[in-house]
Length: 356
Image (cartoon, rainbow, N blue to C red; front, side, top):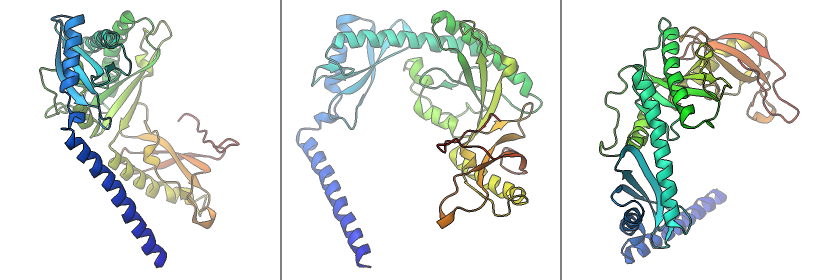
């Protein structure tokens, strides 16, 4: 009992020390007039650079402090002749540094060049998907994974993958023309249910398109409900050919739903496993692994469930020395064990599972 009281008391003292330090920091900032949290000087410096290097072309549209840093801001400017482009760079007027270096003119030039490239990438994406009937709702910040709407059912699945594949082909062709060095491999398209766009958060309409289509709250809202990810392999012919016939589809669910899926999978699979391994226990967390939809359907999916033949000694957690390839419905019900794999880890204990 004494030790527990001591531990709690020590924790309270540490908390008071940390809290006191934070209060002292904030008090110091208040004494200095909160200048550390003010973007005005940085915006003023950005405008000076813009007027000097690009007179009449750039306009500041946003600025935010770089907390927890005590000086500097990220300043965003629009470009007069390109409503898509967002010029973003870090300005620290107090230290006369931009993007971490002393040459602010060079930092702004690079930011403008980057903004024009990004604008071209987003424009190519939108022209490709909007032009083939699937308007882009949003895209990741790297401008590599658009969000669209489509109704995906067993009856529409093949048609959707073909149509979206045709959009992806238009996009990949335009992308390769812009930059022949574009990476080959795969392109992915996030597919939301019809009507998802209604009520989504939106950035200010006056902001450049790159900011509006990568708006954080909008992306969070899209990812806050189940959606599909269609992945298309891109051929090695300079990264220009999309193989729509080999597309893969998986479903992505919010974290809480993945947890519920894991619990249902465990409950559904264990009776089948215990028919062969009477003391089997699962490692848990199956829903956080990779589960893919069975070809031709959105009502069955497959993935791996790791388990131990018997509970580990001393009550330790089971990390899985066996794996069951399992199919189930998207909710984790009606699970069936396809086969059990026994040799799943290398000599260092690293998990090695074959493709599903």
